[in-house]
Length: 155
Ligand SMILES: [Cu+2]
Image (tube, rainbow, N blue to C red; front, side, top):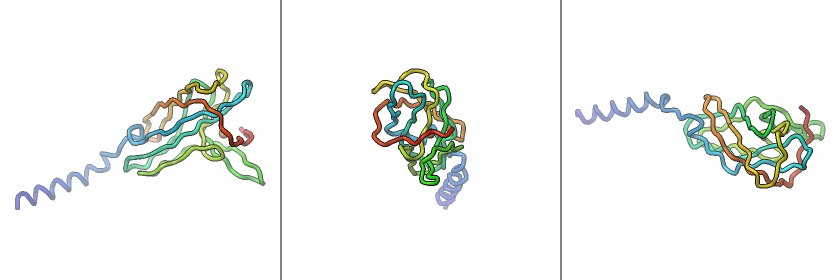
């Protein structure tokens, strides 16, 4: 009887503590295959792509990105408008609990505007990704050629 009471008390405590145990985005989220599109010398902007994998039980959102490789870094998506593909800034990129969000050419991406030095294939570009809960994760994205075309910038 006592054991039973203790067990239910324990379960009660665990249940009550669940919201407190919500994981930090920086711990819950893994960044897979980060890369930056190689662009010709003289081109001032490019994009970074990666897979956001959320292994936690909390919904997270990427709200900011920064990089020493670019003067301005924005979160973008691509929209189809009047038969044209255009890039648009987005305030956040969502990652469902236990889910994945893919950044890829023709879709969501991190826009690097005003490159601070020319890119070379294989170069590592540091990205600092900040999530809604304030936690930040740093990743190294390697520069590589991307076959798919990039829509014209409309910043
Ligand atoms: Cu863009």
